[in-house]
Image (cartoon, rainbow, N blue to C red; front, side, top):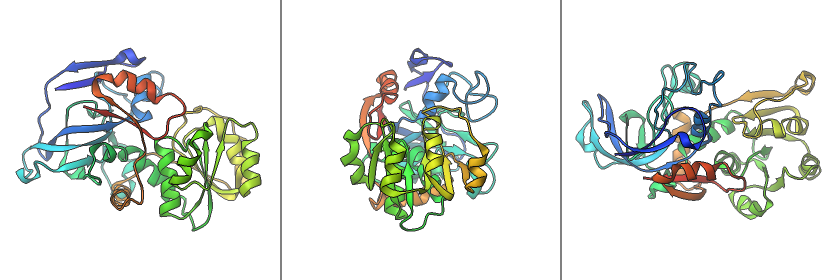
Length: 343
């Protein structure tokens, strides 16, 4: 099969388009012919070495073992089965829950042994992948490309919103609202939980699209007084869903109501910040870290996709052979939604 492997930490030159043996499903596994794989920051930061200590990078302390096929947002068709799996599964169109973990499902996203497809396992930058049948879910939409954009971004967004205990009509600030996670945060918060949503983006040319997703107010962080604009328009916010980090952190804390929640699941705008602890305890702010979600979140997410309560937002597709170009494009500002590889 054709595949793209990461050969080590570094730049785009570390992505190699190669031929390698098609994997064979083991006990309880199926072989999936990959039809689409959406990009995430996860595999780019894994290549660049942004996770872990020093040069190590992955979901586990020991780091990723190279070469590794990246890619976690996968849709495709089951074409072969391993021992213990009925052959009637062949031909089923599926999306993949993106990790394995032990323990209770409700807490699996924080399990010590969480192992991620595309990091600890070979992933979706390929023509085929093997995965446990129990982690394969019916594809929610008729299109492989549309169905591929929810597993990581959607799971992350759903879990972020659900942790807030949002009440109908509360005001929520979503940073990075034009990106993969952010655009889903807007939809989930508005269409599922009934929040009033302020979308923070770089380019106001996306205002109309964000209003269509459910944003009540769209503000650009490029304006030096963006936080004061929000304060003037809606007042203090009940909660913040942040995927940006340092670039918006201080202003975000200042915008929060007393007793508000700041939930963060990304740091594309800076991974290190400064914090005056008095801001937290004097305002009774809850600072919540979040990553991924669990299978209960995933099932609720897929149902919302099937009913078209939540819709895919796709910026551009690339053929698998252009994975380097796709990752370079992914890092540019001004995109709206997901970037997808098509084997």
